[in-house]
Length: 396
Ligand SMILES: *Cc1c(COP(=O)(O)O)cnc(C)c1O
Image (cartoon, rainbow, N blue to C red; front, top):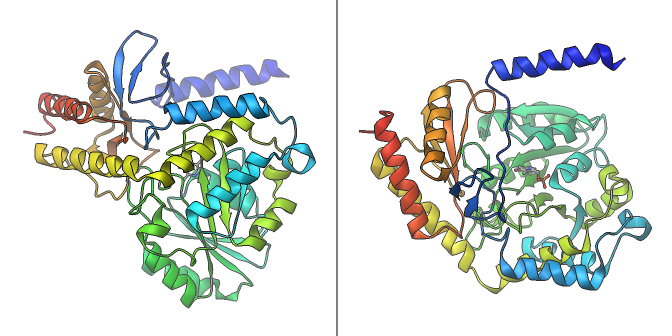
């Protein structure tokens, strides 16, 4: 049978290449960080990792992973409910609930699994999910796995959300779901207004804090902190794979009965392996760091502000951002690729995004800041942007 499929796949791959959409993976031969080396031998500054707090290879995180490896072993060889729960898994769940000021937490192998497994156990045919049009792929997939009726509202558009909430009044339960930070623009969901509308139209609220936990809010506790809506959000999902260590692992934190039902019925939790002890131990260490001091978060906020101001002064067109994501608008797809390639030659690693990842004629370079970037790193990036921007006639 594969004889028939092979030429079909070869043609598909060719058409991806011809469209210029083939994803090549760049190979890093050092630990993940702001200063990395590629297999070509080239040393570059990394401005495209989700390593917002610089924890990916932080000594305290690596040490905690080693210690948990030594004290609790390598793998769990089990799902949680059979024999995959150690004391440190429970401790990590409690620490996440403490950080977000919620009642209880459930761990998953990844936030993709958390979002994939959250809807189906809670909602049925007679219910409604009201979802932002720019929500992450994992939310879209999770909604597909659930029988509830789906409503979509335009990105962060509160008039549209209100219209959908009115339409959805006929349902038994309503759940509004949104990303906290939209990863291609860096804008945040207006959680104060979302909570107000949800209360007015009797809906529950779920947010995905993947790009905002550790990043957004006065102490990095996410958009619930930024908008002071703690306690008004029913479900928060998040990842340990971005700011909170950058390893792997996802979670859902929120109302206790919701978490309890997920432990009984959420399929990616019930039928997939427990996270390894080293990941749980490193996760606890990440919360230790964040709770001991706001230094890392303060550095991140300062770095983001410095870079954005510098880019604006150079005359670049920057999307307004309330996160550590800075979208440098170039509009033209091939220009975005050329610009990113030239930046790499200058030792600055960023990625240019274009349709279909972003809307047509909205191509851009996405820059992600880190607490681990130094002022010298930021100045090097700004100088490279200035030089190439002038060469390519993007700025004067
Ligand atoms: C990264 C991301 C995810 C997936 O997280 P993983 O833990 O890597 O699976 C889910 N939602 C959003 C909004 C994300 O940015």
